[in-house]
Length: 99
Image (cartoon, rainbow, N blue to C red; front, side, top):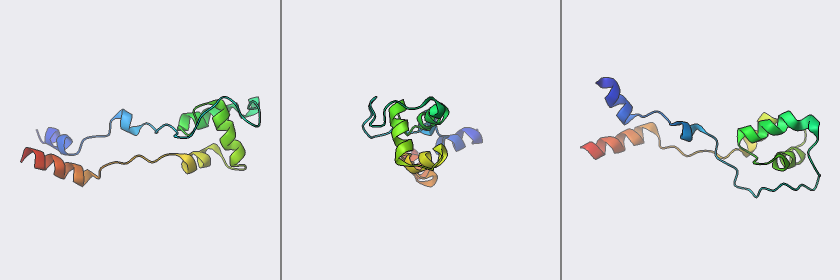
């Protein structure tokens, strides 16, 4: 009983809320630097997995724009933050609804 009440007031984040937000910027399959080289394939896939690029050319564009940075550093720099309600505020709103 206590666990169900606790999870009502402080629910876990759903999988959808934990996924990275897609990039806002314009995406395209063309790049001024041409096709991405095959040696950067793993890094490009990492950037797409982090959610900072949609296509291979977008990831290659980010790599060209930030030389000397790793995929992780680029992802931390370019990732869009999610906006969550603070846990106490959500609990207060749910408590107010049932009161």
